[in-house]
Image (cartoon, rainbow, N blue to C red):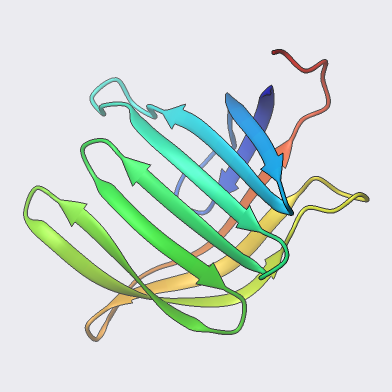
Length: 136
């Protein structure tokens, strides 16, 4: 189902709104959307997989930069960012994760990424479904 979402992240100064495809099967929510933040940037396709049963989130990105990262609250996981210069392996430390529920459609997580001894980013990421009439 096509739905309007709003993404808030420390990486960008303003929340980002776009339409996404949303599906839910067996306790797993799937979101797919495209982003192009600036005219110079090529469009990227994102997929967010929220596995509520196992309390984990997976983010996949394709475009100029490709990545796949898995987030688990209170755990360190590994991911990779594929750039023009090659693979950058990253360690992901997820501080907390709030999954969507019947009470709130908000997904939120706080995490940090590091590569080697360098901390690359600390971020709070949230995605919420905005109330509207769904499109098919």
